[in-house]
Amino acid sequence: MEEKILDAFQEELPAENIEYVSLIRRFNASFFDMLLSAALTYGISYFVPGWWKSLSVAILFAVIDLLYKVVAEKVYGQTLGKKVSNIVVTTEDLRLISWQQALIRNYYYVILMVLSMVQSYVFHYVQQGETVLGFGDMQQVIQLSYINYVLAAWFIIDCLLMSKEPKNQTLHDKWAKTVVVRESFLKK
Image 1 (spheres, rainbow, N blue to C red):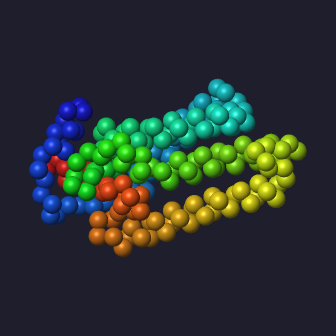
Image 2 (image 1 turned 180 degrees about the vertical axis):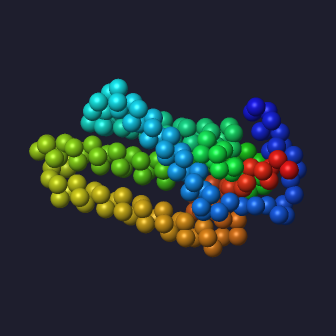
Image 3 (image 1 turned 120 degrees about the horizontal axis):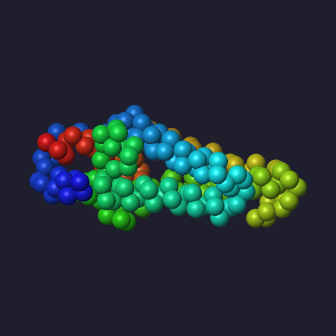
């Protein structure tokens, strides 16, 4: 199967008439991947109650999610969510992306996930009256949550800027020098 996918990337494809993917289709793919991640996380939490009390286990989930996205985009050009949405991540010249590009593309998800998990971990212990990671009262924990608001605003700005780009590139796409196109375009 991998050979078939790689063959599509090796052919010379016409640069005109490329169908760059819209925000809505990309959102659908991300939502599907998020559901997979949530199913894994909550499935494991059923068998390991209280896993969220362990910062190392929470970070392990973030690493697994990152590896899923990075490896799938590097090896196949798409995650399962992207496959369902019929979209592929490629270089700007429509080739498979490199490991570095896959990591750069997914920086935002990692930062947001790790910060959210750290915040949940800190919130749990501070709520019980303990000091953890230098946080001792709920006011400090609330201030920590402002970082998530800033990241959410960054994400919204990123999406709005995407709508102004001719190739529908987000900032992380630009930094990684990648584009997202319809999979059916590559198979023409």
